[in-house]
Image (cartoon, rainbow, N blue to C red):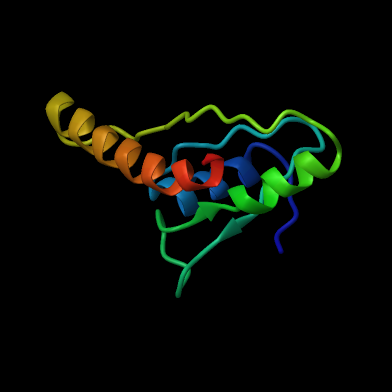
Amino acid sequence: MLVGHEPDLGKLAGVLLFGAPAALPLRKAGACSIEFDNHCAAGKGRLRIPWLLAEVGRHGRCQSAILELWTPPAGSTEATIEREALWAGESLRFLKPLFA
């Protein structure tokens, strides 16, 4: 578990999730839970969406989701768009079963 303050905690979360210094903006008293499959490599973290949905549902809140990507720029506009499309596809394949 890591505890910190903005902007450093959001920058660290961005590196863990996106593999680049693209900050994950956290609001005051905000928190995030990031998990890894095997090892803690930059860009290989995932937000714990199943846990988050269970917690939200436990409190009687809406269980919908908005997929928002913070794709760091690649070498060209085309490469950035290609990366974003790849990430969107991976994210949708992960999320769809959770809402089926």
